[in-house]
Length: 147
Figure 1 (spheres, helix red, strand yellow):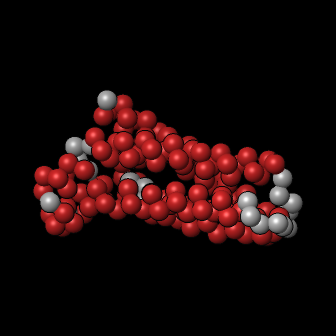
Figure 2 (cartoon, rainbow, N blue to C red):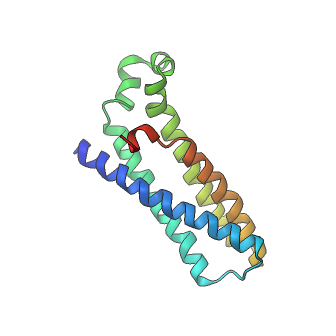
């Protein structure tokens, strides 16, 4: 189960990164070019929201069954995990930052619905999705992706 879940989480991450990048670029282009917010835009942002939520659920389940993440904290203690950069990354930094990124996407999507103008909608989405994308990019395990 663990290896299947890890495989799914790893490859779903490519889709997640792609759709968050598309949504972020869409928000930035929409804001800077003063476009009207259309149902197509809504679907792009909603799809990014759904994809990231599926990814975080996969990641949290993987975290709970992982022999190197949650079990490392349980077996070694938080102090030892924090001293080991690889364990700290997989046990603390990666999950925490990804949760924060999904929260930002969720807040941005929720806040945009309360805005009345296209400019305000795109601005809100651009801010929150860009911050989320930067966080995601900062904590992707790049070494594992390209090996």
